[in-house]
Length: 194
Image 1: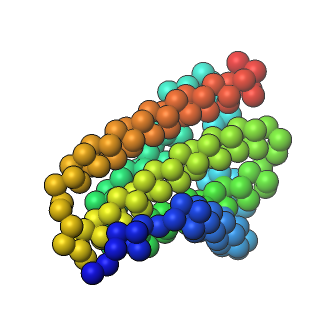
Image 2 (image 1 turned 90 degrees about the vertical axis):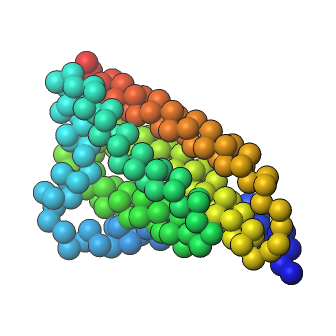
């Protein structure tokens, strides 16, 4: 009989695994972007487009663009939490986010006015990745809970409360992500001086 403590990940180990997964993704993104077209990389980074939209006063488009990409990854993480064997997919989500960041950072450095582009890109990229990693940690914990329930004869009645708490946490993370996306649009406006 397997003990639940055996299957529960220690927070430090999980944090290290997620950090390594993100770092590997960023490194892979930079390496993969070496042979890509410079114009395509600049376009993929989105910093120039974000600043252009801000100068035109299109705040809603900046918000939707910033929010939608990370929100889809957050939804994927949420759904992964309901599977007993989704831990590798959860680590891959972190690596995938890192991969995108690696490609985008290289595009920012290749573009014009690097300082403004970095100021427009980096704060939201870092903070939204932090929100995503918190969500992935929660998904990892719930999927480990499902795994422990599937390999033991433990009473499964208490999981309903865990699922409610899990859903509330993800709702809070989604709201936080929306606030960060609004802040991203506001920051872009400050950068261009509108």
